[in-house]
Image 1 (cartoon, helix red, strand yellow):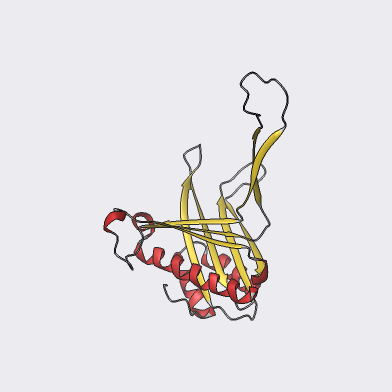
Image 2 (cartoon, helix red, strand yellow):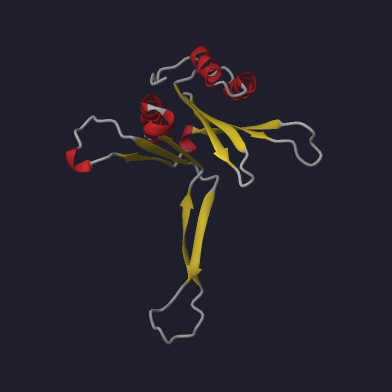
Length: 196
């Protein structure tokens, strides 16, 4: 799946290979992408443990078309109050390429002193921001005087963090790391062209 030039058929095959509710995920992605051409995609299937020690699976599908970034996220949920059987929720968001404000790629490499250019990282974190979600970190402001008891209000920072996707060679395989890097490159290129 490292290929960034992709087809809708290739995307559907990759979704089916992921094995995570493929009919549901493929239907949600297809309804959002419509007739647009698929330029690149990433499929990330992950399991997490909740406090009750239940395994919860979820999948994120990112699709790049000539005009949009499509984000599709599917979660499974156990039976709960008022719901007798397990169920899944799927959310799709289509973001115009012009709205993508940042594409950040964090690469983790072991033994950086002996790094050779072109060596693949062992872990990659792709963070994409388009202004839909921002995290605000606040703390009390001070003036620096240890004896001052005045209220100086608050200080803080706002961080855009709409989507963060982490893959590692150990958990996901080298191919997944390469695929996320290739997708990030294609998305960065698309946002650069849209800005120009």
